Length: 191
Image (cartoon, rainbow, N blue to C red; front, side, top):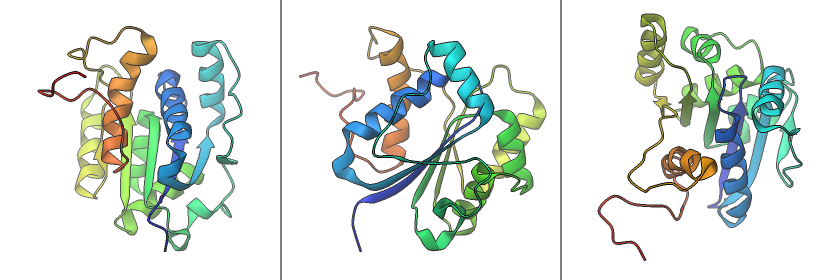
């Protein structure tokens, strides 16, 4: 069995396409650490990407892209042995469906698989403000074994631009996915 990771990425229509872009670019750059990356995007994710970033979703070779309704995709089954699913950004609607156990598309099915298989599910939630339903759903997913990683950037590394600011979140997500990422570490000397 390969020691390299099998990672799935789901991109919802929540604001924050920059987070997804930085995540995919960083995963491309660390191809020596993963065996496969599968990606699924909602229709709204593509629209938000174009609106916020001013471009269509580029070709992210060699990732495998799956249709949002493709329940035959490997990430829809635990037997495919994906070890991590990162939903980035994760809309409150997607969070709510996952918390309620509703698997109405490939993203929510893949999340259900991660939870039932006791594998890593990381939800990069992107919403301001949170209401009580959002908070209850986050607690439900956390109790089921998921990780809520709010898209809340840090500033102590003094990011120099928009992408570097987004990377403060994505580097933490990649750490959670047990990938080796070179990033600012609090209390460590800068080289």
